Amino acid sequence: MGELKFGKHVKYIFSIEKEKDGFESVVMEHLRMNGAYWGLTTLDVLGKLGAVDQDEVVSWIMQCQHESGGFGGNIGHDPHVLYTLSAIQVLALFDKIDVLDVEKLVDISSLQNEDGSFTGDIWGETDTRFSYIAISSLAILQRLDKINVERAVKYIVSCKNLDGGFGCTPGAESHAGQIFCCVGALAITGSLHHVDKDLLGWWLCERQVKSGGLNGQPEKLPDVCYSWWVLSSLIMIDRVHWIDKDKLIEFILDCQDRENGGISDRPDDAVDIFHTYFGVAGLSLLEYPGLKAIDPAYALPVDVVNRIFLGK
Ligand SMILES: [Zn+2]
Image 1 (tube, rainbow, N blue to C red):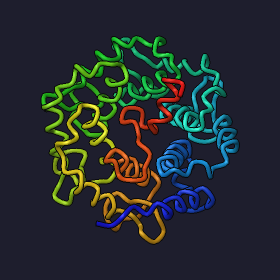
Image 2 (image 1 turned 135 degrees about the vertical axis):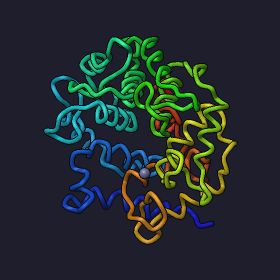
Image 3 (image 1 turned 90 degrees about the vertical axis):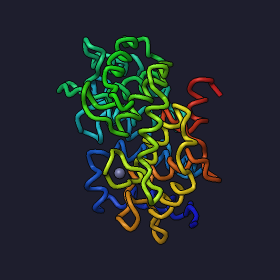
Image 4 (image 1 turned 90 degrees about the horizontal axis):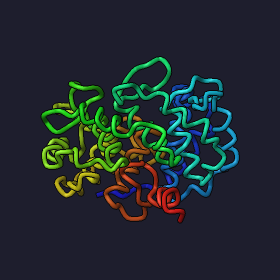
């Protein structure tokens, strides 16, 4: 088995930040806030967050905030909860949550609908992803009291399927990304008793294919990003010992660009920051040596989560 190229991945993450006109930067333009979260969390898990100019990042993040309290993907872009959670997470990494005007941000609670579901922005698409994002954001800000948690949980439970998994809306088919969001939101709100752990554990374990990689739905190709969604869900429901961890580690390591750093979705594909993050975070969940531990529900390093909730 190969090994994780720590130094190369650190170099790769810094290189995308510098190369502003590169292909990936152009594609990532409107997603820059998510890119910052993926890149900086990866650096932290690799033990290299100290090499980042924190003040520069924090000042850029604050320029992406709107009057409404929400954050855009970049300066001058419309606010959306997808970027708002990333902004909060990056500030948490730097222990800078206190620069936020929390009262303004709890406006996220206004995105909750009568039935307990959430929309992602004022345009109104409903999705359990947004339930997770609102719940995780407010939990980090310690303001979960701002929403109707009971109704939020009830809505998520209404998206549970007969196979034990969850979809984006009631009746929508199970998908690993959506399962992470629902199980994560249930974990954060202390509601995991609503999950049928054996049934869901079985569905999630079936996501492992011959190569050791995980897919997001039956019959789909394996993809490094599912290492995160499937594994974190399995850990939250205490069934991670049901998969072959060594084979999954091997699959993720096979997706590395050993020359230039970065991780791709599948072996020999082009690398990107999204899969680099999910690969490294997946290896952290698999307790790969030398990586910081990451919390499966908050998708932040465990020491950051402890600092938020335990003040240490
Ligand atoms: Zn992927």
